[in-house]
Image (tube, rainbow, N blue to C red; front, side, top):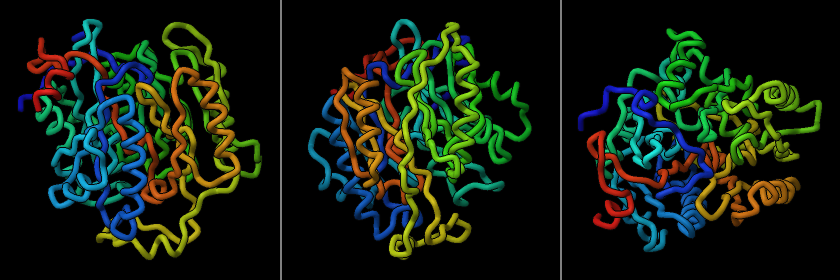
Length: 384
């Protein structure tokens, strides 16, 4: 497949907000022994519940390794398409394509370089070739023209767009030594503007404490709609997250978006009791040489901000914590037009991420097959 060598912004393409209409959503069936304990048995149940919630209002495409296809097909309803495709793990947000569209409704993909969250500097596993190829392969399979951004390391979880020219990122992630160390902050910002059609980049300082992705923005702050965000928060001054979120709040309070609006910030509590991995859970992992390992009692990066916005709902992680209900209450107020789906997500967070991390939206629009015009994504998926 020939990739586009032009830049999305110069072609009039931009990244829409997640709250805008979707054609569908990509997920990847979990199987990696170093991420999902006990042969991913509990993780697969959680993935299936999330997939079915999303499928209530948009198409869900589940990618699966050939040897996991039958298991995925058996655990998922017929309304979910299961597609054979190779991957190294199940983080669709980070390895799937980032989709951009133009004002006429044409949709194209972006294929970033993926290096397992840090490559040889501080990556989480050593072999990520299949993950790095997945975005291009998916776009080719469905007929989307794709921009070649293979020279630039980026994961989908490290960016959030309002669809109107503003993109949220964190310094801790995008300026980390394992991403693009030869580029300055200004050069990285220029790349984001070129590829995402952004006019303004809001650089938050931190993400969530102990987030092994070098603190992705999608775990700490997300757009509800243009000019309005949720921010992970704690009032416990002894919690390491307190100062981190306080600094991010200060940034949001003094910044404006690309349209000159001040941000409305909703404080979304983190779990009151830190979510920590147990000895029993660790006994179910099988780590490869060089793969990042965990220790019993290690705090996990649990956050209610790591939700997915579907056409008709918001799929929200739950942790069996007293703040679960409060998170649902706040998000119900933020999304009055959508159904809230609370999903127990401990069996996902033990893998290192959460609901937003395992999903990637496909915007509604026309598939731009050759970089100029094409069929609607609805027509292509009906033909398959």
